[in-house]
Amino acid sequence: MKDEFRRWAGADPGAVWRAPGRVNLIGEHTDYNGGFVLPFAIDRFTTVAAGRRDDGALHCHSLEMSDDSGWSKYVDGVVQALADDDVHVGGADVLVTSTVPTGAGLSSSAALEVAAAAALSVMAGAPLDARRLASVAFRAETTYVGVPVGIMDQTVVAVAQAGHALFLDTRSLVTEQVPFDPGAAGLDVVVVDSRVRRRLDDGRYAERRKQCEAAAAALDVEQLRDATLDDLEATDMDDTLRRRARHVITEDARVLKAVDLLRAGDLAGLGPLLLASHASLRDDFEVSCPELDRIVDEAMGQGALGARMTGGGFGGCAIALVPDGALPAVLGSFGDAAFEVQPVGGVRDAAPMR
Image (cartoon, rainbow, N blue to C red; front, side, top):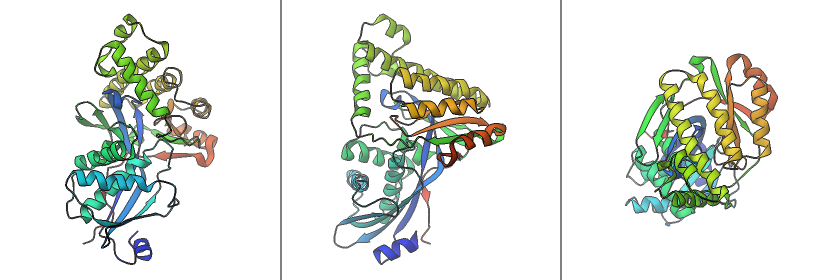
């Protein structure tokens, strides 16, 4: 990456940092409802090299994406969010490369934001800790790019630990690193890319968020995290809002059950929870698609213990929890659309300048 930066910018970079993508094991569309999530960082990374410019301009270039595809707005958002934290970047050259598929529900935008925030803050002489990096990245996407995401993606990308999933209470921001080592349990996590691409800023994600807010108002609670199924049963509301609320309430319960299973070392017990999560996302929240449904059915038919869509939905990826013995069959069913992932650590210095 240093060599690529020299060829492009004509000078050495001031910092090179990388951040992982993530898979959300369970807890979908709960983060902006004040609920619980259980993601882990994966061994697919976005790397950002940054160097100073004297003219005050921000120049961005990607080794994979065209420079007119709009991705640089995330870096611009990071620069503005850093300024809010009194970290002033000035002019900068920013070079990006990534193995995180874009639009696949694996947090390519959060990986870019966190890696850019790390590299640019170091270059500016004001390095931030992981929690502040997550906060800057979150504000970059929500305030400056204008996508109403929850805090989950940026947090796990910044603070994940290898061999663990991150249990996050999105209201209090309290986290717990929960041991998650599928290999030691004779299991594998397989990601299957539906190759249906979606954008979180196309309006459907924002629509679901507004529906959740309307359901919370009908239930007279601050957020759906505060509601129960009994509350839902006793409240008169539109059927669509009822189904949206039911997904969030039951998904929060599934996250808490999954955490209990991981604490007990019962990774195989996650299988039925993954399937129930997918059914809820498909039927109550209506964010799946036929391609994701077929992936889940095929993975189960080839011996997976559980499978579900992961990410915001409307395309992207599904995950499957697969016993070692069934791994060849599952991978063989999907060809190069499928790959294994391992739980890795969060953002880190990719090329120390020392």
